[in-house]
Image (tube, rainbow, N blue to C red; front, side, top):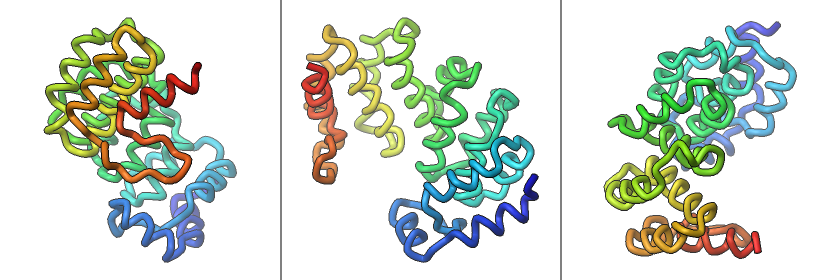
Length: 222
């Protein structure tokens, strides 16, 4: 069992100035070590699961400590209130997305959290709510009113915070990809709103602009 200090010391030893500069350009604050994500996973593989250590790591507010916490925490031991507090306490999207993927997505109370978060005024709670909604499109679409969801995206996405736009846009694209009967409207909404139309994309990657994203994935699926 590693102590909090031992874990933080190990994390700090893995940091580099290059990664700190990279993280800062992506919106990270100063409370970071600058560690490659793969190195964090390596540390997590050594620790395995340690719920109490994970909670202590999260409470430090350090970016890499929180990323590691999402990998070693026991999500089933977290109440809805604890998860809500965690979501609202983080503003760096990399941490928020690891929290979603590793902890929130398969939590037993995910659906009740989703319905509250999508109506939240807190940016990161709303982001998490729309992440869950995007996943719901793929895994449990019967829980959604898809036409009403498209109505809401069309009305709210232009004025949403960029962090929320990202996961609302993912929901829009997933509806267009998964449901041919809603594809034309999803593409039309994306075209009209133009969100992420000019987003820079590396060679070989698919644009997050919903019309391009939808058409490309549908083409790949044949």
